[in-house]
Amino acid sequence: MRTQAWGGKLRCLVVGMLLVAGAAQAGQKQVGGVLMPVSLNLKGRTVELAHMELHKQLFFKVYVWSLYMEDRPRSTREAIHSNSVKRLHFRFLRSISKDQLVGSFRDGLEHSPALRHGGPLANHLRIMLASLKDVQKGEDLVITYTPGVGLEVGGDASGGVFIPGKHFADALFSVWLDSHPIFPR
Image (cartoon, rainbow, N blue to C red):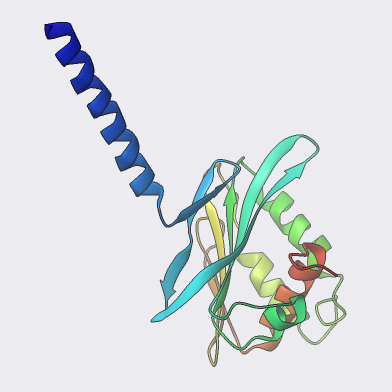
């Protein structure tokens, strides 16, 4: 009789722990083992998780990237040109050297005519790339655009930099979302 009572209490304890764990993850989404909140408060505004994706190179998990937007876009063009708060958040799943990180960004971003060497926004690109640092597993790179202010680059993977205005942010988001489509073409 005592064993049955103990078994019932143990079952209740296990069920209770599962419910608490589920509640702790409520309001979050998981991809590639990374949990990210489905919404954030940035600069007094609420942004929603619009997309989250695991990036692999060969068979190695490299990072999970997330796109947060204040206004839910219906197309890549709308996401790029939206004059609302938006954020790209990268969580690294392996250590990466500064040279690897800079090279990866440079290769991707120089597809934009505006960001190419000598282009009108090339100096902003140099400033952003100079802010990048070696990244350890579990660290973040956070790129946030705020309307009327500009682009902030921060997190563990950057020494932190601010680039005023919207033009560089549009070019960066354009290259990223063209290379990593989240909407049907």
